[in-house]
Length: 239
Image (spheres, one colour):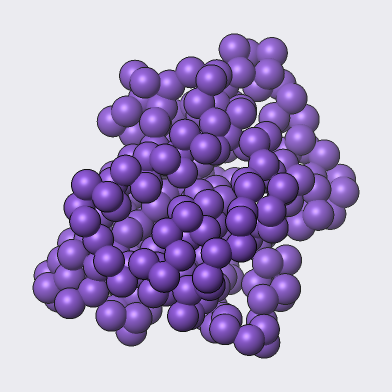
């Protein structure tokens, strides 16, 4: 049986994996869904001093606590920053690395750096402006509304209700990668049902590259919320 670690994106928590995790567990697999410091049920631990490195350590600690090996490591959106750092530290313990409509950084890049290159300049400027506004609001950035990510109307209220502000430092901290052994397989799952999406940039960049496989799902950005069964079916192919 496979061992899955599902890493959520910005402002979310482990709650967003509810239906996907249930489907994977029903198939007999081990599923761990860590929540980052400062969001989800750990919102009370938040603050401007929480960084990307904090979240990388959160996931590493969950993996060590569960004594996982041969891991299928999945990261959604901002979670791509986190799993890149985690995989770099775990090396061969990660069997498959899955970027779910996620940022794919190189060493020394932050999420804000990637927003600047992945979106047209005028759209990127709006995002960067929101980041800078957060610096004047105690260093926490409010969630982007679910509607902006194309999430189904029937799911928007739940997502907006559960998302909480996240430390700006998690978006400005660069990920530092030592270049450890690559996982045996990398998969990019593009949510192909919403725009303007910065993630088309990363899908195009990895398509056809050795060691990568590209999958497209006609979904909003929150694939795990809007299309949990379809996503679970794709992840089960990796078991």
